[in-house]
Amino acid sequence: MSRQVGSLPVHEGRMLYTTRVDPHLTSGAEVVIDVVKTALQRLEVYRRLDLTLRYLHHVLLPSQSLFVRAAFDECVRLYSANKASWLGDLIHSLRHLPMPMILPPTGLTPTVIDNVRKDLQQSMAQSLAASISGSNKLVLLQYRVERNNEGRLIFRANPQGEHVMVKNPKHRIALIRLLFSSHPLVIEHLEWAERRRQPIHHHLRLCRLCQLEVENEVHAVLTCTSHEPIVIARTRFLSQLPSLGTGIPTRSPPS
Ligand SMILES: [Zn+2]
Image (cartoon, rainbow, N blue to C red; front, side, top):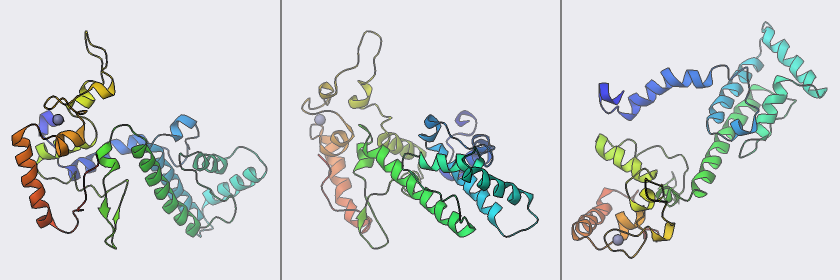
């Protein structure tokens, strides 16, 4: 697509994804619940389960004319009799998420489902945070903090995307590649085997400029002092930070 329309702005790209791709990935989520363990480990399952819960919320709304409500009541009876049922699949899926959740089989109301959907968002955020902190890459995301409404610096796994809102497409793509380890730095480049070369061990992927430390994102951007133009640009950039607002934390970069 980029060959035909150029770089797509984030907002428009998200709209296209939501309208043209997401429907294929979530088709039937209300009826067919993912119960396979491998599917439940994927991040997409949160979107599908949220749609399922939204549908259950609709089913539980007061309306005597809904035949589907009668079918759901039958599901509850099947579950209480230890038989296979749609409700049982939903409880099983929520219980086997990376961050498990409990859905009570009885006493379900639209309010209860609203709260479960909020808990699902929390579970997704916790799962995302665990994936980021457990990664041997993504070091810039692991140390990333932002201010909450009270002004305290916190880690948030799903930031509101200020980095994806960078207007200049080249800058935006470069920043996202740096954050997500899709860059030409040695730490990434030498991890992969090439023709006539095996992967290089982590501690041997040294900086091409100073040969003193591993050339990772932090070293290249924040700490290497061997290339004067980079040092000058970094010093100039850091001197501008205080004027960019109180949202910029005044703390040392991770070593
Ligand atoms: Zn260096």
